[in-house]
Image 1: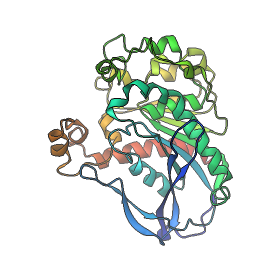
Image 2: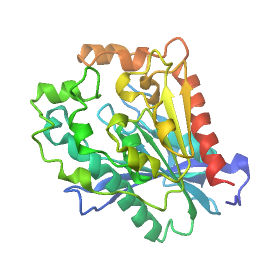
Image 3: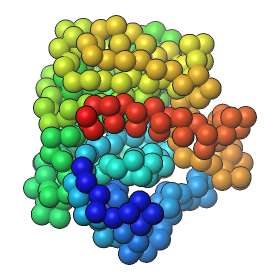
Length: 329
């Protein structure tokens, strides 16, 4: 990696475009975040009535040099489409190009097809990486030997698939049998989705992408549904992060057992966080708006004492530390 610009001349650039995928009926939306020169329109990515946005310069000129790449997949997409912007910006400031892959939006009524995301999202990420590596605007800017992946929630599950883990169908269909066994079980129950009756043949597909050299997963879902053999065969360094204490981490997101099964992995808890800490900073009236809409205000009020900005810094430092260790050696 090299910088041809002084640190005080570098800003966060962002560019949005679409990539076609044979596995999707709609184009994949991608946001590229990168070290740039101050030359673009200043925008606030992700700002809406509930959430604060992240400042970046749209379509700014990338600075000279080559940079390690982070493939970023945030699983909380039903809350808002740009929940990962705060982290993307912080990673750019630490010298990474970030490829933020957006899964097509799923509405509340889409419970029946939601489980297809288990095999479609890993494919999305690999498809986007292939296109970025061929793109003349980016292929000379990225370090093809230093590619990492970061995933939250279902995005963390997708990243696990990409480094070699495999979901066991029998374990998966049992995931909603126990109380608090899965984050979406109540959603499935409301719409009469029977995991034993739907088509899950896509779970048999392997998603290992050998281009990924290191990974970080934060509060991944369905950790008890993975094949033990697949976990043991993971070879890349993997950092596993849970948001919360041993007492407060939801059972469906507790990933502490993964580190005992995956070679070359580490496990970290950010004790004063909650899984809501992975979301953007809320505006002062954000909690009120969500409560008025019947969505509940937990996503906004969970970090009032500590401050979400402080927790974002802790989470970003943990993720950046792991990526620096494995991708900037």
